[in-house]
Amino acid sequence: MNKFYHILKTLFLFGWSLFVVFPFLWALTTSFKDANAITSGATYIPWVDYEPSTQGWTSLFTTGSQGINIVGPFIDSAAVTLIASLVSLALGTLAAYGLSRFEYRLGFVKNSDITFFFISQRIMPPIVLAIPFFLMLKELGALDTIFGLVLVYVALLLPIAVWVMTDFFAGIPKELDEMAMTDGCSPIGAFFRVILPNSVPGLVVAGMFCLIFGWNDFFFAFTLTFTETQLLPVSIVSLNSSVTPWWSLSAFALISVAPLACVAVIVERYMSRGTMSGAIR
Amino acid sequence: MLQVDQLTTADPKVSLQDISFQFDAGNIYTILGRTGAGKTELLRALMGLNPLVEGDIQLDGQSIAKRPVKDRSMSLVYQQFINYPHLSVLDNVAFPLRRQGKKKAEAQLLAAKMLTTVGLGDFLQRRPAQLSGGQQQRVALARAMVKKSRILMLDEPLANLDYKLREQLREEFPRLVAGNDDSVILYTTTEPREAMELGNTMIVMTDGRIVASGPPADLFAHPPTKDAASVISDPPISFISGFVRSGALYFGEGQLAPNNGLHLPPDGPVTIALRPDAIEPGGAFNATIGLSEFSGSETIVHLDFDFGRAIMLVEGIETFEAGSRLSVSIQTEHIMLFASDGQNITTRTK
Image 1 (spheres, each protein chain N blue to C red):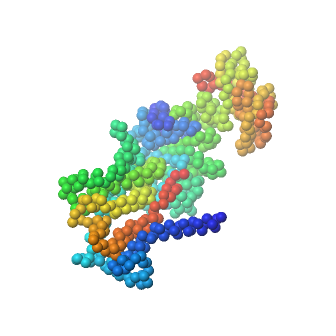
Image 2: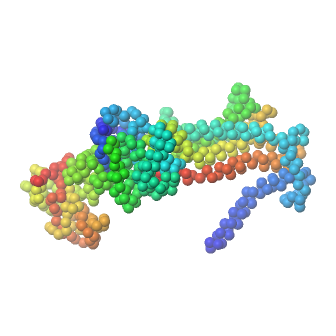
Image 3: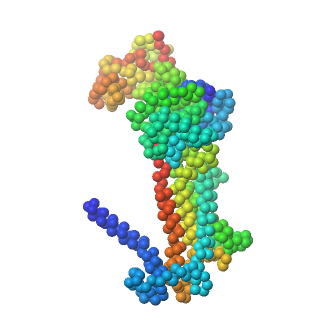
């Protein structure tokens, strides 16, 4: 029975892995095809099914009418996403710590209402926010700038950071803060010296969410930029024309996925929640 | 010297009610009370972790009630063995010393010495999670003691340990805290034996109040109130209603003539407290045996009398069949009498 279960489990995992990896394999093979190979049906094995071409990849780093030049959008995307994620994480972590440790009351508004207020920012459809954001950035002279996008992305990512970190801090016993204070820390010292070093898994999860949402956003990147600033998702979509260069599009897609995949692999070991063991019994 | 005046709090669980007490340096005060008696709340109020509604806390004549937690010269060991999971055992203990401004090398040297004292000299580089429960609590104890604070507070430090470890640490406790002559040590517990064994002075708390205090042996022999007697006694003391009339003590169908130096109060209702050792097999009182349980080398027998329930303690391991009848006697030298207001009114001729 155990052996049967083991085989069944292995088959399922193999099938599921194939299902998950297949789009990437498809994109990878397509990125090495030329127009002829793409139009001649589904083929997978280079040199056997089709003659590989690096045209898809080289075009991404070529300027001029034949090139696409991914470098500018990549830097813009990286700058906007990283800055917005870091700012959101810093502000969100402080806000979450306050919400999890101190009791706020303003009339009928309590901590849970404030937390819900943060989360509710993500409930609204983006289109509702697009026009106010557009008008505000226009007033600030920040339309089509990295600064403007960072402002908007912070507003969008902050609820995620607050949500994740509030939940994480709720799992850290308050006695740990108190112990730090009895050991000579101020409340803020307790946060930085004890709570924050023990919050790495939460920070990693919140950071990953911020990076994913920031990096993949298309809607605001599309509505709040024109020519000066262009983010990767918009650049990819702009390749879709009457004659779509699928080879370049596939290479572009793989490059845009790569940074997040790398970050995920690097931080995966920090995502375990087991670091609190030994804090309290 | 730590002086507490009319300490009152408004804690959500148990509020402290008008607590005044003077704690002298060099003494170990065991604070005994059941769960919810306000022991932890008292420590937290002293520490500054729970706000005061009223009252003052003075350390060496200076009010510290408004000082931040870190500036009170107090240490606290929780019952949950709280340690810093991201630091090694050595750095855990060095942590408060570093906050005092000591250099890293000096702090680690002092921490290593303290860890050796508590028997963890071989575990300096381990993380708390890699230690057993008893070892984790030793780390917490070492961290609290290394600071040399004026007040060392231990909140049921052995409660989460298994029986063997509890016994072992209880035996070692006097050695571990030796040399803290300038400190006041406050040790809370729910176990009367632990309180009597470890403290120079025992404080009994119920419902957020101090109901009795004094040397443990005196308090055990003569608890001032019924509440105090109830908390101090282990196995539990039994209370039955009775009355005094014409120089005799009546309860249910029973009657006891005063002897062994016991003086009865004037005629009127009294509460009779029967310590487990006040009841012995063989005698004029008939009871039905309820539960019988073994505690170490003793047998605890729950008895149903016509006047109420009581517990009998028998030396050695004996088997008592539940439901059968048993004749017992009541030794007047082990009973206490309480007035209707709960005050101990037992008087004896010595």
